[in-house]
Image 1 (cartoon, rainbow, N blue to C red):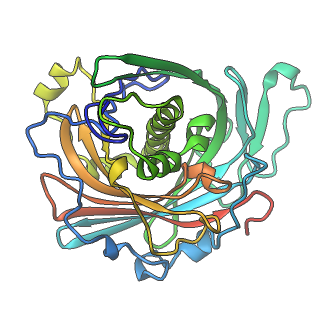
Image 2 (image 1 turned 180 degrees about the vertical axis):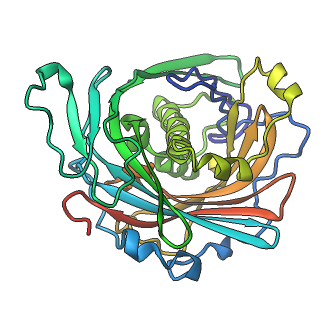
Length: 365
């Protein structure tokens, strides 16, 4: 086995209910027409502070950070707010994304109905009607009256060691139900959408993989320990889950494809008609951040790790991810504090996703 977080370890996934398969190479070297670069084309010190004028409207959407805790995992009303900034040559675009937890854990097949603000569940609703959640007066109403059914989250993670040893794991997830609110650069609501997310994947986070990779490296040819393998599984799943948060509404799709180039028709044909998103994460290159990030637990290290994102195995974006422990309320974003990077084929196209607020249910303003 190559050092933890690097080498030729690859993961193959089968994700449902996703339309496109997610192909992940955690710490793997992927042969592509581009040289894989894990450093963005601009200095990490450019990471925007909370005082960045582009993110000033955040205070009217969600403000402040509640202290991280390691108990009471999911609390209805937990919220996180991200600022998204895209620099496209001379133009700058800004959005805000607020994710709000609407339910606790729900099992496969559970129905959740979205009601208008002030609306009450039907008096004749039976036990099979499921759960009812209410919109707030300021929310978008496009989902009002819709009923969602919790999916079966399952995936297979398979990795092959350098010596040919193969191990795999199958894992299923319960769901959480969230509202995803998208705002323009002025803080005006564009859209409210609702979605189920895989709760264990968010709760697992990527922080443990960074901590273990930087703490010790197995000897050359030695297999990963069960704990190291479990950390890889958590990290892969968390990357998928966080990406899922960013792609659950129609107004976020143009943002995603501004960051990642659309694959060619030839590439799609070679990939079996699918668009496959891949990650190459250099966990062994993780460094401890010296900057203090609000929301991270006291005494907890925050890591910055290089990640290359690929589309159909062609390197697309070189990123840096800033990762904190996924302790509540940061479990709602898998502990991701920031993602910054640039497109490999167009380095002038840069992006930043930054956590701006994180509040616990019952405490958010």
